[in-house]
Amino acid sequence: MSIKSPSTASPVWSVLLAISLALIVSVAIGAGAAADQKPDELEELLEEDVEEIIEEVRAISPVVAERRMEDLREHIERVEETAHAVQADPNSPAGQAAEGEQFCYACHGDGFEHFYNIGDDITTDQANETCLDCHSGGERMHWHGGAHEFQDMACIDCHNAHSDNERLLRAEDQLQLCSDCHQERRVDFHRPHHHPVREGQVECSDCHNPHGEVGSAQLREGEVNETCYQCHAEYRGPFLWEHQPVREDCTQCHDPHGSVHPGMLESRTAQVCQSCHVTLGHPGDVLGADPGDDIPQQGQFMVRGQGCMNCHSEVHGSNHPGGALFQR
Ligand code: HEC
Ligand code: HEC
Ligand code: HEC
Ligand code: HEC
Ligand code: HEC
Ligand code: HEC
Ligand code: HEC
Ligand code: HEC
Ligand code: HEC
Image (cartoon, rainbow, N blue to C red; front, side):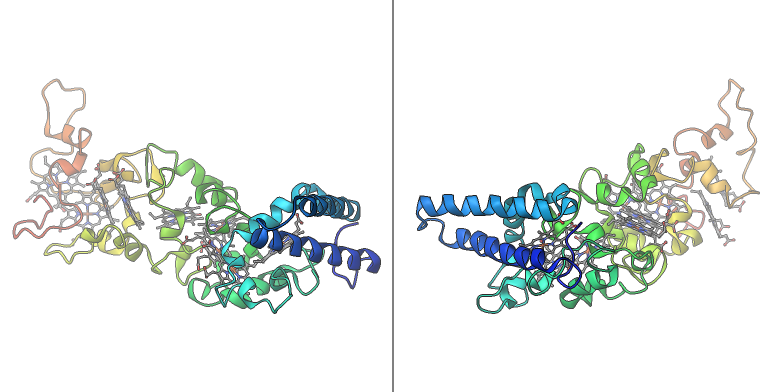
């Protein structure tokens, strides 16, 4: 048996649980506010009560017991450290709680109707609506219809209201959180050339809005290049001589997550370029040198150093009057 809403669970246990939790909550809240004044004996008594209640909850719901119930006290203390418990904020659950009412009710329903056991005491939509009551709009403007909502995901797949992680995330960092499901990303960001996400300088959410966004891949600015210009503004141009693929989509040459090739290129420079420039009218035999030849040939520029970039160094665009071929 697991904890259900009062309407479906055994009424005796539900009432008992509700009362117990209400009690323990008032204890925890009281303890924070007036810890200094409280006589030691009272503290001890309350401690015993908490232990008793925890035992009761364990008996009622093995499911809950298996989860974070081993330390309900800690669980409650953690939620009290969050933005949700800030009484001074009139929009927070604590700020909105009526006199003598638990702030927990804003999320759990009056008298603890549910404990977010999705599919058991609450549906995904109901769980999300509880959060969206206060958090719709803004970053979550496109939650409905976004890729994650479409997959029937819940806010609490990524957030845990009782967490002490930043942004109440379920994991300590986004790489961990997101690559639980997007496992290829874990690989990408461990490649030798990657955006410094592991290093904590860039986050998934700098480029993606995990709550949903119009346009492809939930990108922050709705499209690839605008997303990149947030940090790489120097490539925005305009340039006197524009290179078409740079204008169109940075990911035609770069893998935005990580790559084995320097500069996070999709492949080695010459190959990246030749994916579009198949036939070239180069001077001499730039492309056709014999790799086994002892005498350095121009062709070796292709495989050495910067490859095509040895000559076409301004591949993102040039402002030089003579830069039509991006050589300066
Ligand atoms: C901002 C919303 C929010 C507030 C405020 C809140 N909770 Fe929760 N609580 C949750 C969510 C979400 C879960 C589900 C946690 C999970 O599965 O990660 C949860 C889970 C729980 C659980 C079940 C734990 C389990 O393992 O199943 C208990 C018990 C609980 N909360 C008690 C409280 C108490 C007591 C308070 C007030 C001191 C409180 N909560 C305040 C959102 C909240
Ligand atoms: C009664 C209104 C209310 C409810 C219900 C509520 N929140 Fe909040 N939440 C707030 C306020 C107010 C803040 C603090 C201001 C802000 O960051 O927007 C906040 C902050 C947050 C933050 C940012 C915390 C931080 O440290 O930066 C997250 C994440 C969050 N809430 C998630 C949730 C989730 C998930 C739920 C549902 C389980 C939920 N909230 C339910 C009002 C609410
Ligand atoms: C796919 C994972 C994921 C899901 C699902 C998710 N979030 Fe978040 N959320 C995040 C991440 C990551 C951040 C931190 C982003 C940042 O710092 O800019 C965040 C930040 C927040 C914040 C604080 C910053 C802000 O945007 O105001 C709130 C509030 C929040 N989420 C609420 C919600 C609510 C409500 C839902 C469900 C409707 C939800 N989240 C669903 C990953 C998620
Ligand atoms: C619980 C699993 C889960 C978690 C955690 C998760 N995602 Fe997803 N995500 C999915 C699923 C399922 C899809 C839809 C199928 C797909 O495109 O892979 C998706 C889709 C996406 C997409 C593609 C959207 C599109 O339009 O193609 C992006 C981008 C994304 N997630 C980013 C993130 C980020 C960033 C995080 C962490 C903040 C995250 N996801 C956390 C499951 C998850
Ligand atoms: C520097 C910006 C940037 C960062 C940081 C970033 N992404 Fe992306 N991501 C992109 C771009 C751009 C695309 C679209 C790629 C395309 O269209 O080829 C994308 C595509 C995706 C997709 C959908 C396409 C696919 O390959 O499945 C997922 C899922 C995704 N990213 C997850 C993540 C996760 C998870 C993180 C963090 C661990 C992350 N991204 C960090 C820029 C970024
Ligand atoms: C949130 C800021 C941010 C965003 C957005 C961003 N980048 Fe970066 N980018 C960085 C940082 C930081 C570095 C590392 C710089 C360093 O190490 O000197 C970097 C490095 C790079 C590098 C060089 C990698 C190397 O190994 O030399 C490339 C290429 C790159 N970014 C392309 C992109 C593309 C393409 C996009 C858009 C999909 C993008 N960036 C979006 C911050 C960002
Ligand atoms: C036509 C292919 C191509 C396109 C499209 C392209 N780049 Fe690059 N980019 C390169 C090459 C080649 C390098 C050099 C890699 C190296 O250092 O070996 C490079 C290097 C970079 C670097 C690292 C520069 C440094 O000094 O280390 C950044 C940052 C970068 N590109 C960002 C972008 C952004 C942002 C876009 C989209 C606006 C973009 N690139 C589009 C080919 C391209
Ligand atoms: C996604 C396709 C694509 C990739 C990849 C690409 N280019 Fe281009 N490039 C173009 C297009 C399209 C033009 C414009 C051609 C035109 O105007 O006739 C162009 C123009 C040029 C020009 C000017 C030539 C002219 O006729 O205007 C040079 C030089 C050039 N690219 C070099 C490179 C180099 C070096 C790389 C690799 C770093 C590269 N390109 C990668 C598509 C690409
Ligand atoms: C040794 C220097 C050098 C290297 C290396 C080099 N180029 Fe060039 N490239 C030139 C010169 C010089 C021209 C001008 C030719 C002319 O004016 O007839 C040129 C012209 C071009 C043009 C415009 C003419 C045409 O054929 O469309 C493109 C595109 C081009 N290069 C692409 C590339 C690519 C792709 C690579 C790498 C695979 C590359 N180049 C490597 C020197 C070089």
